[in-house]
Length: 107
Length: 120
Image 1 (cartoon, rainbow over the protein chains, first blue to last red):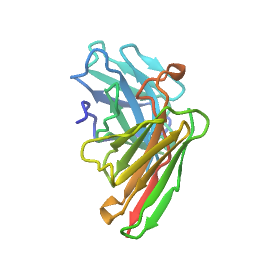
Image 2: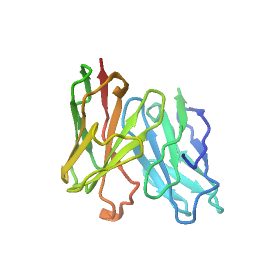
Image 3: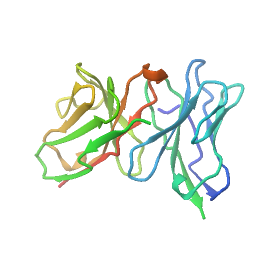
Image 4: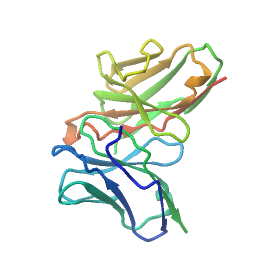
């Protein structure tokens, strides 16, 4: 079973920052937090991952709390194309997919 | 990111026939390829992991004689669904990786677009 919990769904206005939370209170010290997203009827897309420091790339930022029990994925300027299911995964050697968060970007 | 393709993108077949799905890494050599299955409104489930030149490792509950996986080269893996039945209808997705290459971790996988299988 997935070790993460995420809200079932979220809405965000186009152009605003989308902040997607994830709880992983049982994460082990050496386990990374990975974020993927899946647009309807497509394969998943890797977004970002991190261990304990905050990370940023061209797609998103990942903020991990100091105790590592939760994290937030930030899409700084959401567009309609960011509508997807976002998965937070706290594993090192396999991807165990929970239900994810269905993010809907509204015009 | 790296590009992974799948062929066909969709297939409809009769019950009892076999279907082969190809997964190719187009711009890198993948030592490890993964096959997932996703039923409607559900999450992805890992079916098997294959390393080039080795036998695939199947997840619990996945019949290896029904889902034949071949990973004969660093750019191609195939999944053959033998004697397909309507309950095998699903979205099959592959991913590819070469852990350690350019700092890639095991879980940084590049996914194909998926193949939708419908068995009548």
